[in-house]
Image 1 (cartoon, rainbow, N blue to C red):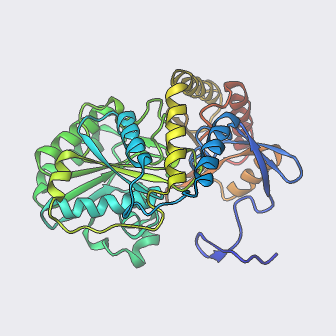
Image 2: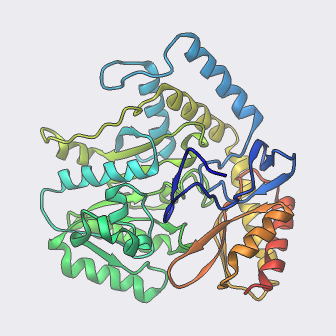
Length: 409
């Protein structure tokens, strides 16, 4: 069937991963297609919907959207007009993130845009020309800046990366030797480095993670050497790792923080860039321009306000359930002879098979939707369950995935 719209994922087409799955509705942690078949959604946690398809959350959003629409202001030009929501949501987000040194928020429309802006801010405020350092398996979005620092897609993006001659890709610090190599590299080359872009956990590349001691040491050295740090928590923020944010438990803090996805549970396009007082000081009287038409959309503002309030109200329950989801996955995973990793409400299973898509289709037919990863060396399945999914249902899905996966590994 020809379609009037197209997708750009390697080619110009209208095909999707689940080409015959037409979603009609959703509830809690399930999607429902036009034939009323239900599917457990273990992938949309990576695509914004961490709280799932929650009727209580949505009823509050509908009420507030109706109010804004009734007053005729679903949208305002944030560069021209004031509205109490801008200040209210920015203060709520800053308080929620909880970094005392962060005093300013710039609202964007996505994680990709957040990274684009963060790179602009870093370049303007660093006061020198030099190299940009990032991890070789990282993913930071599909805008020009984000593509340039996404090591995971370096070969794909090489043709049109404006920054490609300035990027240094370092190995992700998933062992002691790599951790030390990165620290040594910074110490030996700090005079040539402008800023360091980092994901604390490689979510899109099969779930690689380091430890807080390394990031504390890295952030401290960067600050001492006057190298700006950009911390990308677009995928890992808002409880996904078992904390509000990965950086919650870090003693050292970054200069710039990129957020999006779960910030408003995917209700409207929305992201945010938070930066320190020192970065703000460095930007004074410097020309920097970044704006897109929908920055500060009031529907985005109010949906973020409601979502953050929901997070705070049910925080204890969310903490408890994320811990339960992780334990449920690990309890099942140890029974099978497949490589796996898990952290909070995120997990990956390595399945190096040329028929991986057949496995994905088989799982879909059973009613389980998952995410595929490839880091150039290994392939497999990544799971990002809804944070409020019951441990029993999650365990049932995980057991099925491992059993099916054994036939393809």
